[in-house]
Image (cartoon, rainbow, N blue to C red):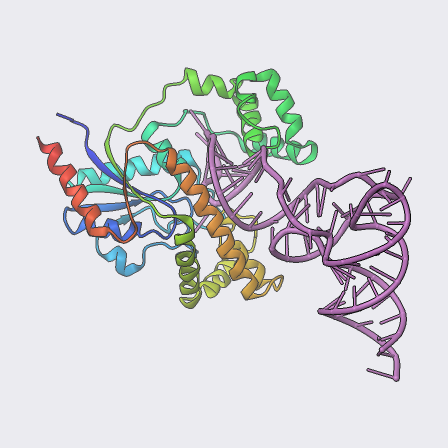
Length: 310
RNA sequence: GCUCAGGUAGCUCAGUCGGUAGAGCAGGGGACUGAAAAUCCCCGUGUCGGCAGUUCAAUUCUGUCCCUGAGCA
């Protein structure tokens, strides 16, 4: 009935076995894995961002992992374009695309569409950033109340990022955010998506996260940061803002000890996992599984695929 | 043993010229349309070290004891 091609989405917080579940599925049906994690795109940080290992990637094709230099920025819109392209490639090969990742915004943007706001010229962007640094987000928010009252009530005066974004969009396009959100066509991705989530309580997940960070350190996370630093020393480069990267960089610079870096790293990872859990709680139509149930996930996926046949 | 300085929220510390107290971090909940591993919002009763004294009233003043740190012996 449903003419739309099938895609599988594997989501959940860090460290819940999404990669191994994807590989389990790929053993049942021809499939390729496509990343939707905003950090695993960076080529300088395969260990720290927990990208699938070369052995794991040998199980089936993996796309959109480790291809971006540290100084380059990834955005939701750029991701959507890359992912749509990757999905088409995989479908063209007669394989099942498996979207795997933890960046909720990226997945939502891909599946529900994102407003086609044109790219903002760098000088306008910089101009707004300079202003917000100087005058504070509250000033821009007060102006937003004039230019876009509807959006202004939705974002907080202290929110530096969203106030900057709203200001640059209005300045560059002459249209406010509300107009772009409402009057532009959202084009949802034309796929029949099966969403599988990995669910776990935070306090159960935490020791796993700590253990995984120790493994990363044992695998040479510090050397990875050192090598990345040799290639890109600017600590404010987009790639350096990832959790683990920033802490190890501070350690390399002698600002904190390795032990302090590790403790911070665990703490920040835990807080991040909490935010992810909050995000995915709201996401609709998810089939939930516990971490480690890779075969159960694969069963669920094959069931779903055969149900689609009828 | 003596002299200082401290003992206040899970942690680091403010503060109360006497009317039982509040920040940051941690923790919990939430938001999320091009930086999202980002950005931001909401949530604070704790014998204010113990005991006694002064006082209408002590966490705040006084005495004493206990504990911690530094210095002197």
